[in-house]
Image (tube, rainbow, N blue to C red; front, top):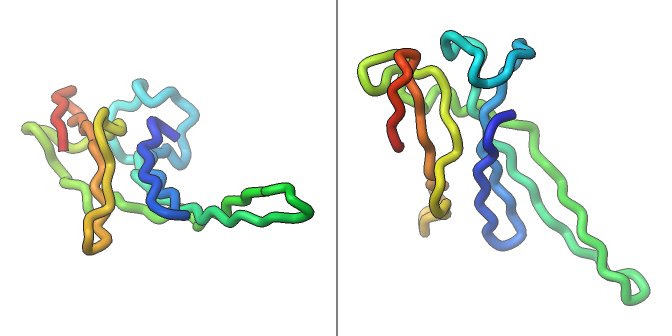
Length: 113
């Protein structure tokens, strides 16, 4: 996976990452975005208290592909990949997750999304 971007809200942890499903190359050695996939996984934190000792466990959902919601093209070229952006991630009042993301096209142009 590449550059996880995280939101923590209440007992939920939302993690947006990019992954390559088949390739074993480093993220910067890919000519295009065919094998690249952005995914979201959600963790739920549960605390227990046994004999005064507090334990926390996190149960994770299976990753859900978000590739269909990313644009097919950015900055004049096909979308190649993204990196989690610098900044604040939020959950809006209607439950929408907002992550800072930097995306790169296959012609090596980068944009903030």
